[in-house]
Image (cartoon, rainbow, N blue to C red):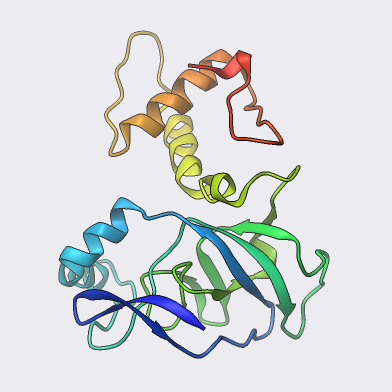
Length: 202
């Protein structure tokens, strides 16, 4: 399969072996993947990310080996590994938390030599973490699930009240989510295109 690979400090398009799903895993085809600011940061400052991973006790990337970024994605189910429930049919569009559940614990997708991200044509996801894309939502819009979830989580954690002003690494996402939360208790999504409903338009 083809992939955009972080190699020797550059992003190059090359071929690599398609992954095989293990127990509890699902093979998916990438339909859309966002380019996160973290990916751009990793491209320029990967060595700092490695240092931070070491300091926090996380498994760092080995920069002498290939890495496939991409943690904001929408995919299509291709096949299942052993020990899966197979609740969703092949061809179903899904998103997921960008992580794999492994016997060693939770491992991230995208900043790992072992867990291929969405910049590849195919990748592995953990079945329990799959989120089915509803109502024919376009893959390009469904891929925004992860970054918008970050904004929604930040708004919930901040519990902004009255005239308080939030500071955020992603002010646009935070502002939208904060205003939408004040406007209504639940976010409504259009089935045909990602457009805020009248009640949530900010």
